[in-house]
Length: 209
Image 1 (cartoon, rainbow, N blue to C red):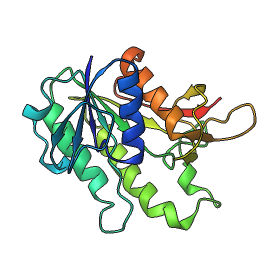
Image 2: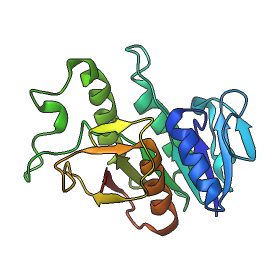
Image 3: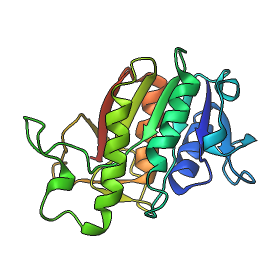
Image 4: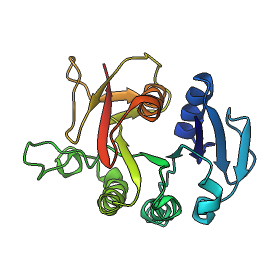
């Protein structure tokens, strides 16, 4: 299976790439500069310049893009649209490293994590930008996308336990009442979805077991 990891030099991208390589997948990193990931081959290109030609040979494309500053937050939606347009009408899957702020906290799906009184003000603009990108993604019936939200506490340097719970649109807690997952365990779940999952045009979520 051939996969491409867009933004493979980022913290999440590196671990996803490493997990895929260790599973024996044929992995290509798509990066803006020198390839610093475990991928044996790379394409040096900005995410906004990616074309259908760049992605035509892959079975799956992972979008590990991240933006954190006020002026770059709109790029979550812009870059995702670029990838969707490049994959429109193809059988190539698109898996997006999503956010937790848009996970629902009630059965009616009228309230989200980011709406809660304890959600940090610092992260509200990021959550809003990623939620907007997801809303636009839901309208793309021409792309085989899967949006994967992490748990609320998404730990870059957390341990790799190898065990996780697969959830859906609602915030899921483990048996300890926690909403937590490491980047490493998230990478396991994402590669599992690529190799064995069937959640096409769905948002799923993952939490540490």
